[in-house]
Length: 90
Length: 153
Image 1: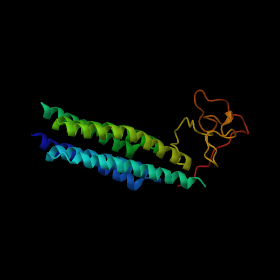
Image 2: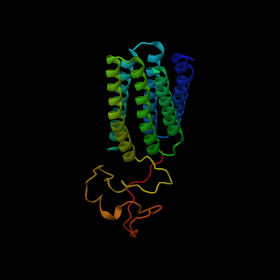
Image 3: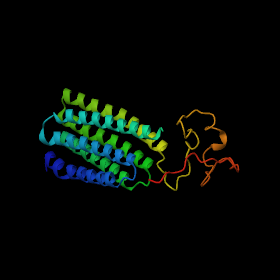
Image 4: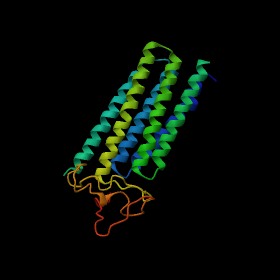
């Protein structure tokens, strides 16, 4: 079993399971902050999947995509947190 | 040899990702969910991208990996702090088995000002209602002022 097979058939399905579990919390989440936390975990999952895909495909451009996703996830989380806090400042 | 190290790092990263997702699903409280998922997610990104850096063994790839890991390690606690603070001020209910709410009474409910003297009076310390903690101060009758009613969501 080569490393690409191991990454494709063991690691990526585990990450897909984690993605689906985070998706359940995204749909269930009782408050808005729960959904934001679930989205943050989904962003981290996508970053990990991109790291594995870089190893499987041999292309190093996926790390740039991971960096962009980290930036966008952080900015989105901060924006929604500011929105939640402004909503309570009445 | 490099492949075994990479595979082990990927498997560790996948394990921590599963831990983060299960904690996100199973924890009873927003703040516990945030605690588990933030820490495990930072570990997971670190392990998986370190596996990529070990596998490629290239200067450009290693630089990108270090950049991403440092960025995630710096911003994930900040994001979790802001989400937790906003959710606490909004009134997201704690777990019913929570023993300590150390922020109870520290915030003025109208202005969200942490330093206002009326809100941070000492009789509003932790444990003045509900289950008192082990070293909770004695409850003074008539002065226990719940900071805010828990809004139904």
